[in-house]
Amino acid sequence: MTSTTIEHDIQSITRAARQAARQLAKLDNAQRDRALRAVADHIRANADDVIAANARDLEAARKNGLPDAMIDRLRLDAERLAKVADAVVEVADLPDVLGAVTSETTRPNGLLVQRVRIPLGVVGIVYESRPNVTSDAAALCLKSGNAVILRGGSEAIHSNRALGRCISAGIESAGLPPACVQVVPSTDRQAVKVLLAQADDIDVIIPRGGEGLIRFVTETSRIPVIKHYKGVCHVFVDKAADRDMALSIAENSKAQRTGVCNAAETILVHADVADDLVPALCERLAAAGVEVRGDDKVVALAGGTSATVVAATEDDWYAEYLSLVVAMRVVDDFTTAVAHIETYGSDHTEAIVTADAETAERFLREVNSSTVVVNASTRFADGGELGLGAEIGISTTKLHAYGPMGAEGLTTTKFVVRGDGQIRT
Image 1 (cartoon, one colour):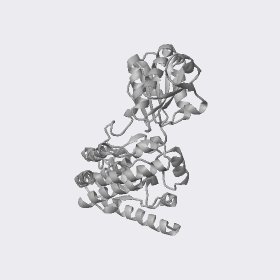
Image 2 (spheres, rainbow, N blue to C red; image 1 turned 90 degrees about the vertical axis):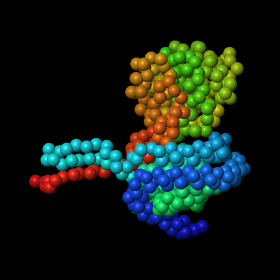
Image 3 (cartoon, one colour; image 1 turned 180 degrees about the horizontal axis):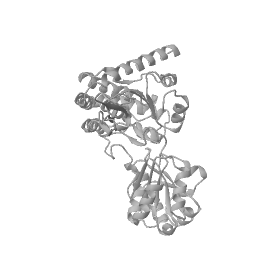
Image 4 (tube, rainbow, N blue to C red; image 1 turned 120 degrees about the horizontal axis):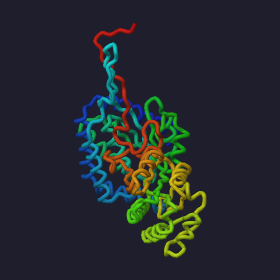
């Protein structure tokens, strides 16, 4: 396919999306919800086709030597696909976000001034590996009245196309404009470059994937970008932590599912409890198959355990492993723990385990990552777990949204001014 053909095809997609967005914004919530339920029905009805398409992607991924974390993100089985459909229904069940009045005041001259939620318009999603992003993004954009253009990675092309067919069938059966959800068919990298140049038709770009993809989109795009960057997430075990709770939370945060951005990558342990908790943590993690990369104190304290502990390098504190590896460091105090997070974190998710309410509140106040957790696993930094139904992703950009983005995060506000004849003098 030539560059001219790619440019023509992408521009046709974006122009159609702009027209569809205008139509979609005029529909009421009931119409959008009917479409979402129809999409879920079509995903369930075509489950065998989607899983067969996914099997083709998995086979190619293994042949191409994709890392285990990416293969895990790519995989769709009957259970995962059922959850994909359920997530679409959960989005349909959410309250309508459009038309909500976020503020209201009456001016001295009698003008009623309101701010009202409206769609962003056309959203472009560029993502890797995870076919569930196709359905989650489509559902959330439809719920919030946005048209969406989906450009997944080549490793998931068959899965994304299969899900795209289900989505198209669902929205068309409900009478919505077909172009309100479009899957870019080309896997050519040039298609992404052309897409990122369509500033007249696309209002915002959201990239989801590895560090290389995020940097490429951010540096190339002529459209505003909401970055969903890597997750270097921390668990800080405070001196006042409950021992059993700390062990459970650390293991779950790291090992429950490793190839996701809300898995913990570094565990910080307060020096006052390190003699007991470091060996216990290393044993617990080793039982889950996790390799620990520790500072000098961790290596020394773990010496009498059966755990595999190797000396950490400076690079380990920055690492998003997405695998059964975790960094561990002993910190002298609370201030040192926060300083470590500020230096090496990615503004994603941080957790503290502590029985001290004052320390917990201080952690919530001083740590400015997009999700901050007290006495629970970092794995709860997820749109579905936090009541959003699904998520476009987890934004690490403070403008326009921060943290897990659901339907409300895909809206902006306009001013609505109501008068009874006022003129300005």
